[in-house]
Amino acid sequence: MATIRCPHCGSPVMVRGSRWECGWCGDFGSTSSLFPSERAKLVPEKSTPQITLSFTVSVEDTTPPPRHFTRTELVDMVRRWDFSENEWACRELLIADFPDAVRRWTAEELEDMDTQDLLCETGNSDPQAAVQMMKLLLDTAESHLQEPEVAEQLLGWDMCDLFRNQFVQAPLLKQLKQDDRLARQIFQSAYVGDAQEDLLDACDWFGEAELKKHLYSLLTQNPFFEGFD
Image (tube, rainbow, N blue to C red; front, side):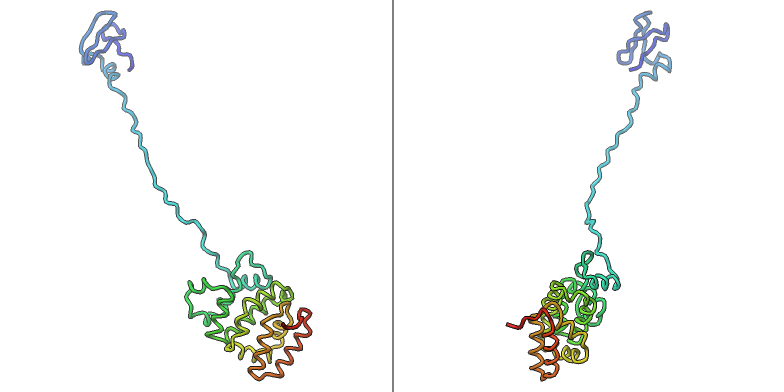
């Protein structure tokens, strides 16, 4: 408490309750008899109220939404065979280029498919579109078809169901009769296996002897061909 001074002599006084007494001159009285300036000292300073705020912070998912790639970007990824930015570039390129063929599935269903699933399901529902999808991927990745890993991924895995699907074989053999580029992509790539054997068998099934002869000739010129088991 601040020093309270006697109104008579100005010396410090002792305050007890509502009374004061000066030890120097002996004067005393109620605190109401003090000078106003001294009475003001008896009023305790108002303390600044302390306000404590508490916040509840909800942690939301901060994962950024998947980036949307343009068709040009997807083509470039497949052409370079570089999927560091988008591992589903092949599938997304097919979805972008064949909207009518994939319209039967929802976006969520397409999201659950890989490239093989999409080609296989399209082959069952729209064989002509499936053949064109195959051509798109092979044309785009053509410069890598002499790389065993790429050729096996495309021909031995992603497209494997198309080569054995009779609904796809018919339009595919028709395409091969007029599209030597596609024939060479399939029969002279770095992958030789069930894909070529299934198509040669399909030639027998559909009575395409001349086409089988041509395709087998391409195959025998392929340094990766070591015969069928």
